[in-house]
Length: 96
Image 1 (cartoon, rainbow, N blue to C red):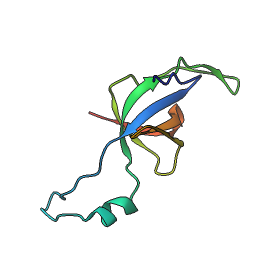
Image 2: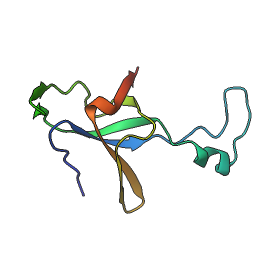
Image 3: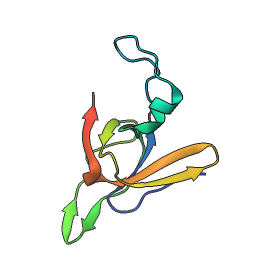
């Protein structure tokens, strides 16, 4: 199954949270589930176009890693995969 976003929407796959912190502390699964992952991989990008009367140019591309607003978008489950569909404006930064 393939998702093709419309207008200024972007399909993201959340990146799994680290199990060990940088200082070496092992996190339990309960501690990991409290925080929604904010880093994600771009799976598909919409064509952009005119949204709310303004021309939107897409600045992210498939394969980019990005940081997303904590409670942005809509979760979509497809089998065992979970995707997040957000507007491009909900993406805060690219991870280089």
